[in-house]
Structures are given as structure tokens and as C-alpha cells.
Length: 417
Image (tube, rainbow, N blue to C red; front, side, top):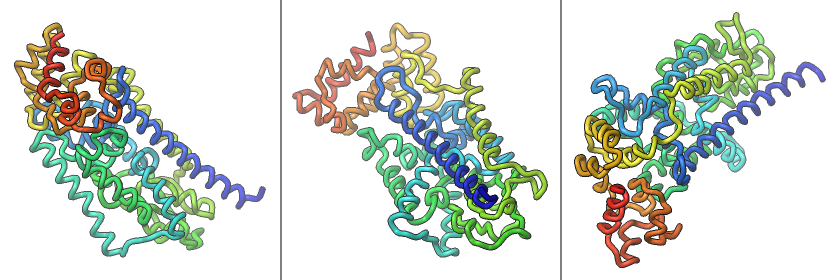
């Protein structure tokens, strides 16, 4: 096999490896979301606990009040810190090598190229101004998360909506997030990584640090043949062909340009043009930093995968559903549960957090989740069917000649047992 064919084979292999890694991460993330929603036993934490952007939203509350926003765990901060370590070496490689929502857009982008037989590019001036939207979203969501003491972005977050696709809440609690998800995926069929370019607040935040990375993609002008392949494949529409160093904050370090360039050693991941490393080395290091940090934190007990013990589950479900509860009240409620496990109704009465959020206009599925009483108990009592889970609680109870109040009384009796 001649040198050109060997190089072409290796580049294709590199791109396939990146795709496989991203696919595994997407499938794993999707499985976590599904198990959280539907598994009635020991369930993983919700999607909010595995999103690094939650740490950015909660940072001001943590520094000023010493508490985390509801639904936020130390997990979020551990993931964000690992991303900062990655940025130190490889810019926004988290976006290019790990982010499942980014890869989901790439999948739709491939569909778009098959359907339309071409790659669309926005007018340069329009594109330039649209990219500032994600920075405005970053400022807006961090500000209101702090002011309102809750995850302000949650109802609008396409990744949260994606993780609720199999839930009856999708078009009730996450209708806007679902719309943004559809716009992002359909938009990606026309314009690569639509959400990443124009709407992603996490991408906006970490792009601020892109220039400080040690390793960057560098171009050897003396061997470049100006074939346009790097520019044509870049999902962020960066002018790689006319840059000596890719120092653009929009670069997600996906290395697609590196793995497409037909001339060996023309595009390199390197420190200047001196110390070079291969794409596979960079991929392995990034994966090791991110998942190694999570593994270490999991072993030491700092990173949580599962919902807390039974005595905390009810509190978590109730508190997370109430947007206007003071963080200090939440902490007090947890403390009360700890002290009064044998008489949980004492805490329920003292803080009145349990039944107020269960209303007739929410879905039956949502009401059951908020109660955190096993689904089997409700089926044994009311013989609920799968089809009824997406209907409103009021409608389902009226079918049985009962009221929402009687549903709440049943929950109260279970909580006091």
C-alpha cells in the first residue's frame, strides 16, 4: 500500500473512531435519562445532575449564599472542572469529542447532506451577529438563575427536553425546550452544529478560554495545497485554510480538518510547529481527563450516580418541583427528614412542601413522580393504565368518580406509614 493510501486509510479510521466514541457517549447518556424516568427501583439521578452548565448557573448562589440550586449536585462542578483541565490542553475538545448534543446535531447534519446533496452556509455577516446570541443566553440564564434561585434555563434546555422524550411531561413542562430541540436538529440539517454556533451557553462560556490552550491546530503553509477540504468540513465554518494557528474561540477541536487534510503533516495538533501529537493521542487524553475525573470522584464518593436513600427521595422530588422555595428551607427540610425518618409527616406538615405541587392540571405520571411513592402502590390502589400516564391527574381521577384531593389523601397516608 503506498503512502497516500495509508494516510487516507488512517484519516478515515480516525474519523470513525471519533464517531464511535461520541455514539457510545450519546447512547449512555440516553440510557441514563430513560432509566431515571421509567425504572422503579434504584434510579440514576436526573439529567440536571450530569450537565456541567448547571455548575455555571449555580456558581453565584454557591459563592454568595453557600448553597446549590435545587437539582444541582457536586457532579456538575466536577464535570466543569474537568472541562477546564481539557481547555488548558486542547481548547473546546469537550464539544468536539464528548458532547452528546453536539453529536446528535452531527447525525442530523449527515441526514441533511444526504437529502439536500449540499452543505449550506449562512451569509457571513448574518452568521457573525447570530453567534452573539449564545453569549446573551449565557448572561441571561446565569443572572436569572441567581435572582430566582432555580435552574432558569431548564424549561428551555433542548438536552433536558431530549431526556424527557419518553415522558408525559415533554409537551407540558418542556414544550419550549422541545421546540428549541427540534429547531436545533432541523437547523443542523442545513447548517452544521446549529445549536453549538448560535444558542449553546456552555459553548459560549468555555469559548472565552479557548485562546489559553497549550495545544492548538497549526497549519504548515509550505505544504498546504489549498484544496479547501479543511474549510469545507469544518462544522463551525472556520477559515482553516488561511490560518496559521486555529485560535478561533468557535473552534470545537473536533479535528475533522486534521483528519481530512490529504497532505501529511500539514494540519497538526501541536505547540506551535514544534511538539506534535496525533489525533488519537489527543482523543485518549481528553477522554481520560473527563471520565478519569468522574471515576476518581465516584470512587471517593464526591460524584453521585444514584438518587439518595428512600428517606431523601421524597424531599428531592418535592423540592425540585417547587421554584419559589428558599434554599435555606430546603436544607432545613432535608435535616428534618434525617431526624424524623420514622415520622416523615412531621416534616411534611412543618414545611408544607409535599402536596402543594401536585395539581389537577399536571400529568398522572408527573404527579406520581412528585409523590415518590412506588408506581405499584398506585396501580394496586387505582388500577392506572399505561395510556393514562400522559393524561392530566384531574381527568384520570374523574374517570373513577374521584377527586384530586382523594389522590393527595392517599399519598399522605403512604407518607405517614
